[in-house]
Image: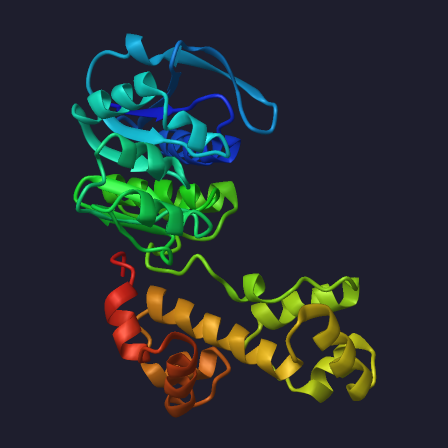
Length: 320
């Protein structure tokens, strides 16, 4: 029997908040013989609903939704602040949630869940730009701006936009196992199921994107090869520049010195390894380019004020 997924949208919603999860569930349905998913989209009044980017989708009317719902998912979008005053929309979300096995939101769709009273006394996340406002507006909601997604009881919330794909993959993994979630991720050519505890913030987000194409390629090389020789002489040679000129241009265009960028990139690689593998710390240190467990520990304490072991215990993916 197919699991029914109802995605709630509204004028001005973020298209990727709907399309990303919808494609995850639809791909899973293709890979599962029986017991997959059926995705529906609904809005107040139904009909043509414009997304924030101008693309229009056709939705059924929320008032006409009948029968059991497996997963109720609420999209976000720049128009969410004005939608909070839409009593009909909020009432439909609250009513449908009561009959759903689980409830989820993408990005600032969490505000609509909170407005419907569905997040009281729960730990939740949302887009990091909106986390402060969510925390201030709803005193009974515990907001954590860092994770990609959070599960609290039967309520799942996720961070900004494309983290909705990570959330949907996690739901597929919960329903059908991690092997299927990995197959769906491969089919969609996306990251293989990032754990929810992984931070919204990644090394590339902490540095500027260089204007120079060779430096952009070099930045990508650093992030993809943390255990390589990433010394200034090696990087300068790879970029075809003198060491002095390379250091100056890289720092000017990224806002970080080459050494600091490499250290952050390696720290991020170590964090991923701790979250998705069971490798001992000495292997994590080697494969992330940090060299020794002592350096791994020192870098973790510097950036995240937590030991590598504590981080693994807190954020390790349950699929391993």
